[in-house]
Image (cartoon, rainbow over all chains, first blue to last red; front, side, top):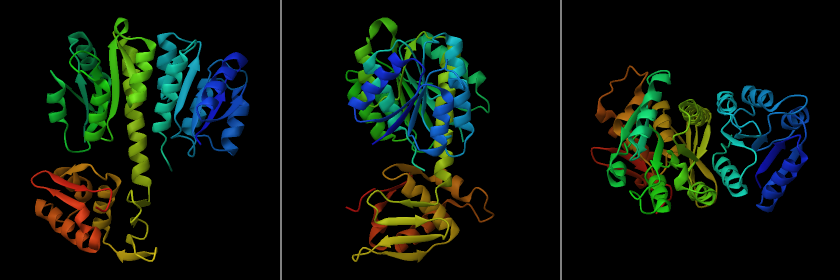
Amino acid sequence: MTKVLIADDDSTFRNLVKEILSQNGFEVFCFEDGLNAWDFLQKEKADIAILDINMPGINGIELLIKIRENENLSLMPVMMLTVRSMVEDQISGYKYGADDYLPKPFDNDIFLAKVKVLERGIIQK
Amino acid sequence: MGKEVFVLSKSQEFCLSLKKLQNFIVGDFLFFSNFENFVSFINSIPLDESKLLFIFEISPLICSYEKAIELIKKTSGSMSIVACAAKASVNNSMIAEFLNCGADDYWEIGMDERLLLAKLQAFIRRAERVEMLRSLKQVIFSEDKKICLDRREITLKILDKTGNYTPIQLTKKEADLLFLLISNENKVLNRNYLLECVWKDSSEDRNPQILDKYIQIIRKKLNSHGKRIKTLYGIGYKMEAKDI
C-alpha cells in the first residue's frame, strides 16, 4: 500500500485529502505542521509527500528543501498543494524541487489522478 | 548525450514558446522537433536513451488519446508524456482522464513561459534522479527473476530448476553491458549508445564489432536465456523480459 504524507495546517483540506486518498487505497499520514511531518519522515518511510506552503514551524518550501537535501528522501515524489496560486509561487515550488504543484481549491478527480501519476513515478531504492 | 523533447502540436505559438526555452536550459540539453502528425512522430522516436519528453496537443490530429498514450508508452517506456490543450477545449474530467490514461502531466497552451520552463526543468531533474539511481543500483533482476546481475561481485546468477541461483563470473565490461540490457528489458538499445556507455572510458579498441563479440560471450554465459537477447540488424540489441 502506497504511503502518503500530508502536511497541511488547514483541517478542512487535510481531512478532504485524507478522505480522497484513503478511499482510493492509499495509506495516509496527516500532520498539521512541517516540523512534525519532518520528524515523521526521518523516522518512518513515506512514498509520496503532499505539502501545503503556509504552515507553522517549518513551511512547505523549507520542508521540500530538507527532503531534497536528505540522502534517503531526495527521490521521493512531492506535490505542493496550496492556496498560493500565483505563477511566481508555482515557479518557486518547482525550483526547489516539487514534482507537481496544485493550487487550492482543486478538482478532486484531478488531484487523485495527479497523486496516481506520482505513484507511478516512485523510484524503488 | 542530449535529451530530446518531442512536440506534436498544431499551435505554432506554443511550439515557438517551447523552442525559446532551449536558451534557458544549461548545457545545450534539449532539442525540439515538431511533427505534423502522430504517425510521423512515432516513426521518429530514436532507438536510444536520448528521449526525455513527449508533449502532444489533444486535437483532431489524434483521434484517440488513450491509444496514442498507450502507443507512446509501448514504443518508449522511459519517455514522459505531457498532454496539452487550450484552456477552453478541455474540462477537468478530461484532464483527469489524460492523467489516468498514462500522461504524466497536463499543460495548458498559453501558460506563462516562466512556468513552462519551471515544469520542463522539473521533468529534467526527475529524469536525472532516475538515471542516477539506476547507475547506483548494484543488484538487478530480470522481470521474471530468472536472471540476476550482481555488480559488486561482477557475477551473473541464473535461477536453476531447484530454485537456486548458479553464479557465473563476468568481466567488468560484460557486466556493464548486461546491466544495460537487463535494466532496459524489452527496449531496443542502439549500437552507438551501448558502445558509448560501455566503452566510453576504455582504451580498448572501440571497433563496433567488439559489441557483437561481447554479446556473443554474454549469450553463451546466459545459457538457455541467451536467446532472450535479440539482434536488430544494423540497429542494436534488445533483451526480452520473459523467457519465451
